[in-house]
Image (cartoon, rainbow, N blue to C red; front, side):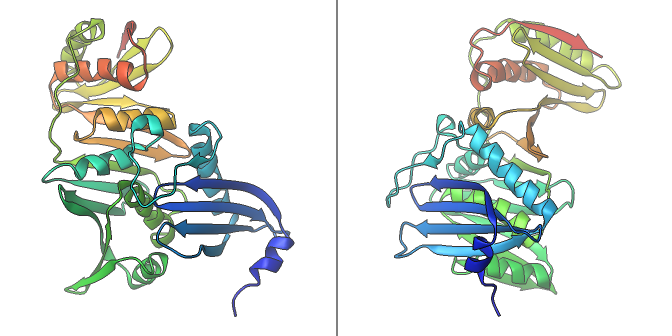
Amino acid sequence: MSEDWKRLIVESTRVLEDKEGHSYEYSHVEYFLHPSGRTIRRLETLHVDADESHVRHSWLEPGEAEHAMATLRARQAARGGKPAFQVLSGRAREVSASAGADPFEAALRALGQRSDGFVIAEDAVSGRFVQFAGGVGEPLTLDAPNLSPAELARAGAAFAGQPFQINEWEGHYGFNLTLRDPARAASAARRFFAEVFASKAPQLSFRDENGPQQPSAGPAGGVVSQLVPALEALLTRSGGFVIAQEASGRFVQFAGGVGEPLLLDVPNLSGPELARAGGAFAGQPFSVNEWEGKSSFNLSFGRDARAAAEAAQRFFVEVLEIPAPSVSLETD
């Protein structure tokens, strides 16, 4: 027998809600604290092609509820605490960094503009992953290999009514889902971790694999001239880092050493900054790591000190929006 959700909600106190509209779907999510100490999530969605909305209720355990609400509050903060409404119509919206697109969405959008490559989203805690294939004129295909029967059942329930396919090969099961919109594809991947893999606090990263390298940004500036010799010296040591800190207090940092590639790492980025990073470096093999409400951006450059230095300057100018950065260096 199903739960009497109306009665349970009347007995509860609403603690958080959010409304979001896109070109393809409207959603309204509400969280209610029940006297039992458990949390109810009510999700109402209306697709542009549907005649009526679809409502789903679910119980969330305390730790799961706190993580879900913290994630939602972070999204609200990234867009200034306002509902992210777009016009509901049959035409897909144009997504840009300034419109608040997340970098995973930007990577999937870039994948759709190439003839090859794929994007992988992985949970560093469990090691589970999903991957996307796509290209010019092709839909985005989410592929989750090696699912257990229980995970396969949860996937079928989570994406019921959508064009998914189940594959079996030598006793292994895979799940494929076709999506044409990058925003929906990014949302589906995160939903897969939460509902299918049952990851209550996933540490997500995603990689844009085999993407074409973009040309470096503009003429070299002071950041480049300072960083190149410091990064070249870093590559001769057994390990360490170089931090370039701007006068505003914002910084980028590099790790590397003998036999190790140069790795650009920028921690504690806001939602809009992550979106701009995804747009600025789309098509390059970057990764974004999400953990406990915080995000960082990583990009590897092999042993090319100049390319790494030029990327740092580009990060200050295009992502952190500091037109003429002035940096000081710290090394170890």
